Image (cartoon, rainbow, N blue to C red; front, top):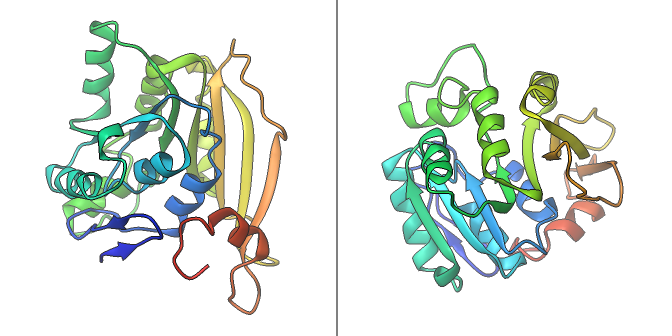
Length: 241
């Protein structure tokens, strides 16, 4: 379903995953304003890349496996005010990572990713949606290996996951010489346990600093209205805020 934000429009009609609160939360929270180069892994419709373009002066590269989603992404980039700073590459991230390493290309100062997170369970009959949601298309090991390869020495990566999947990813950080530098715990409704977490990762040896290791946020009040803290975070993007 097409979705219009304050400064750009998203057509995600051919993407496995539509525009979601998860994506907006990650795109608004990630500490990427100072980054000069940003990589969006599994870009889909390009939502995170467009939010990053609005929030920074960076050049942004989006990598998307599915050709139809990549086509939507390209159209969304072309229609935006920041098309000169946005590029889409249609390939899998492991192949992209290997090519960048082989070419000794510059690494990225920030990486953003809303990755597949279901390791098992029923998969959608829609193959694009199944690919976007299940780790058989991008395992945590592959994701972290690519982040390690593509992330600049003092860069950071922001990854959003359901809370129940966080321990699986955190258990693989040390093997990939990555460290957890910060975390946002987000509850969907006031009074509920956080069901989404954004992890801020860096190389073990990095000097990347954050103001607070762990933050908490509630998206909606009990009456269904957005919380003041979520409004403050996302008001530059949503039309009605």
